[in-house]
View 1 (cartoon, rainbow, N blue to C red):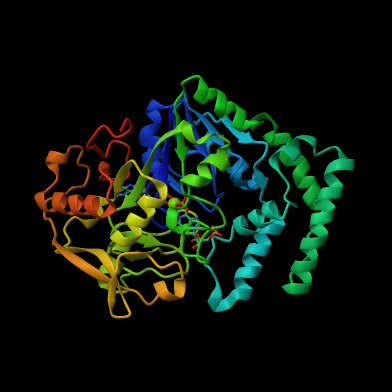
View 2 (view 1 turned 180 degrees about the horizontal axis):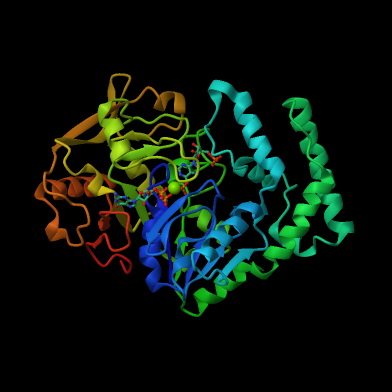
Length: 432
Ligand code: GDP
Ligand code: IMO
Ligand code: MG
């Protein structure tokens, strides 16, 4: 059972990119299964700082094969740009594979995402505007265009009628519902021809590649995007993304059976952030929130938007751990809390005069919840860059242990800085 998943436990941006890069040294495959270029996974190494949107974060390790699985939605223009940036920095991207079953994000998806958001006004979700939601809508609506179709793009009798049919529908919505500009069939077709040419070498039936890899005993590191609280089913609907970032999505998004995943590592920040709309029970709309945002530079790796900041939410964390069956927790950005006089953790929600320890499914009810906090004394000594548990100040340790208790799963890895080496291996995590 050589598959291990790294999954965001909160609302995304937990530091999955750094952790996947750190763990990639012991693996043969690193694979993405959901989302698209709404993701921004930061990896910092000697070649520079990278915000990866589609290419898996294992790409910096020369022996790792990186796979964009069938559950991902791919904007070919963005992917080609990312490949070019990596190559320019000296990274060999010839070990990248893209599933022929992955769906394409087309220019009309990007336009529709932005037009729909604008039309929603105060009801807007705060999407990344990358066309992810509309592309998944077409997939489920069975009119999506898949990466594999690019292999046959110059067969005008097959590809063009499909594109023509979809584009007529989209242009009707764009012009009649939103008053936008229609797209030209000839221009989009030309783009598809170019994409087909450039992406052909990468396109493969990746589920078979992965099934064979697993059967032969190779290690497969599964890289989640977004976070469990943004899951289309289990997140704070409708303020969610349009895919399944939690563990369930990994099986369908890669085409591998359940027994092939031996463990799942839940990545949690030592506090909480969220980008876009939707309730955030522990949100800090005050000087402390601003201080964390500026200290930690909590601005989106994809859109540059300021991230909303709050204390750690133990109620949401336990929900997320139960949903994903995390076997280990990875705690990131502990160093950001260095020097705070005190830190708080939410241990329950106050709702209509009662304390509850479950997250309500209805966002209107969730929005009424008030945090019940436990307060911890802060620590003066830095945790930043620590690589051993023994180097953590006692108050930081107390904080870590309380989080562990609240989540209900051991914290096996602690990240104390954005670089690969700024990591504490607390326990041998992977073979639990
Ligand atoms: P992802 O989407 O989960 O991969 O996370 P992002 O890359 O969007 O955001 C995480 C941010 O935290 C990035 O700027 C990382 O460089 C940074 N980061 C990751 N781990 C740590 C850590 O332990 N300490 C600090 N200070 N920064 C970290
Ligand atoms: P990574 O992988 C944080 C959020 C958006 C918005 C909602 C829906 O870097 O952790 P979408 O464009 O997906 O339709 O937007 O989901 N969102 C993310 N927030 N990190 C991400 O990815 C996100 N991907 C989507 O901000 O609230
Ligand atoms: Mg991110």
